[in-house]
Amino acid sequence: MTSMSIAPYFPFRRVKLTRQSVAQSKDMAWLEAEPDARFRPVCHVCGRSAQRVHDWDKRPLRDLNIGATQIWIGCAFRKVYCRRCAGVRVEDLEFFHPYQRVTRRLAWYIHELCRKLTVQEVADHLGLNWKTVKRIDQAALEKTYAETDYQGLTVLAVDEIAVHQGRRYMTVVLDYLTGRVVWLGPGRTPETLRAFFAGMTPQQRQRLQAIAMDMWAPYILAVRTDVPHVRIVFDLFHVVAAFNKVIDQVRNEEYRRASERDKTLIQGSKYLLLKNPENLRHPHEREHLQQLLKINETLALVMILKDLLKQLWTSPDRAQVASRLRTWCLLARTLPHRCVHAFARRLDHHRYGILNHCEYPIHTGRLEGVNNKIKVIHRKAYGFHDDRYFALKVIQAFDPLNGR
Image 1 (cartoon, rainbow, N blue to C red):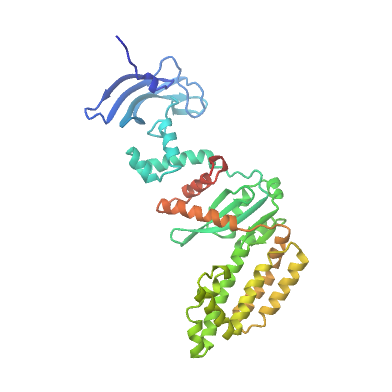
Image 2: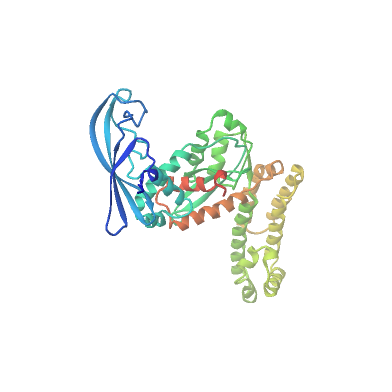
């Protein structure tokens, strides 16, 4: 005669199983558990042994499935008086958290599933409410990532990402050297980035050397206020993107000034002017652009300015870049367009961030790739209503220890 026991499947140290029953449909099993008398009750807050039992209670707990069968444990537990905490506390039976309705091992399993699946997919898979899944996953993330890890930061990249259909923004801070997302905060104001710096010690701030960003005044103000010694490096991608908007304004103005014959060439040429030459794959696109630049000297000069603008980021010689920048601004001012003059003034005003690229050849391109992955995380979950949870999910996704 053989005897079988389910105890090995429930290696809970401080409790003992007293009863089990299985539903006729075999899709659910119910177990009864109570504290093991060999152990003295301990406070779940401080871990000290309790002096006396205040009351008894019982709670249903969801455990890991066995096959396709849901496992529920009706666990009796004691409420004890703890002198150190000066109050009544739930005893620590180790296998479940006093404020959760699932066992610790199921909570860990849910957290692991949420690395790859959405909250709703995990909820459907386990037959749980999505709010329960989200709460469990967020609690685990808070335990690991609640405190911002400022260790080893020397070079950063900062950018914003649009959330909630572009009506709201979050600021993303990236460790440029490792690719780790260090911090996300709501908004894109000076106070947003200053909140990141506020968590650093004076020694950690002093170790910072450079920050790559676009010409966004609130970020510049935050850096100059909290870490004035840090070199600000402006990113080529954002500067060229800003100049592309100027090119489009010039195109529109030239269209209004052009003759009827020339308007047919200017019309529909927006993306021909914005594309890089290597991206003009069709012969008719290249021919159209050549004809357009031939009949319109202003647009031809704007395209030359675009090429010269990119060259400002190609030399490590600070004096050479400064000379190129002066030449660029002088050439830009020869055009009869106020938007070009305004851009030249803006570029001249932010010359320090362009020249700093000579000593720190960094850019936000790496962060742009990170932002694309962040958008995938956001889109996969059909958006996050909780900015804090979203920030924790992103930090987890780009943790080097997770192998991403």
